[in-house]
Image 1 (tube, helix red, strand yellow):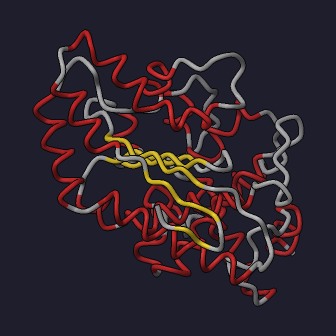
Image 2 (tube, one colour):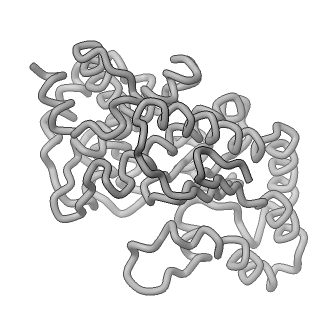
Length: 298
């Protein structure tokens, strides 16, 4: 467990546990999964009531418990062979160092990273999310779900620090995320900043979240998303940030946007803001979304 300036990074050993789950009798797998997921249950601390960790696993595209064992074991071996767990730990250590240098004195809580193999039969995860999803929105926890496509494995470090930037941005004392008032603009800007940070550390090719790349130069997509930056209600964010396919997959209402639209627009807004102010993505980790949007659109 590496330590950076007094805080600890824990990358849970989900490789061995996933291997054991996939090799266990089907009836035993849900309980084994619960045990594996329990150290990362804080990811769901803002959910009402006690979270059903098996249901959350399925909802977020985690590996299946009742099929595709051979395919999943092969994919798990590929992830292990690519040193995914150690690479995530090293990337988080380096990313935290960069953030602490840029924002000295900011207290960052200990971080637990939870790495999952994805579900090869999940259409949204495989075809639209391109085999990678992440959640860094709950300070102290990161969840990374992978399918070992070549492009995914090449971006392990960039993906980890993208989610780390979210984690630090919304840590206590950082940027505010009030579910009652948060806007699409807050979410879009956070994705742009996280991508900019990944690009700062790993370059544009690896640092851009892949789902947004096809729309980076699409002015119609940009204009459409800008009209929704003030939308509130987190149930609406999937469509505006991730696109219509995500909205459909997770029970939202499509708004006429392609997959990754909000990421593309977030990158454009943040790039403009950083160019105008001369700041880096690390330095801007807590800059208010409203200020970033107003500067970028001026």
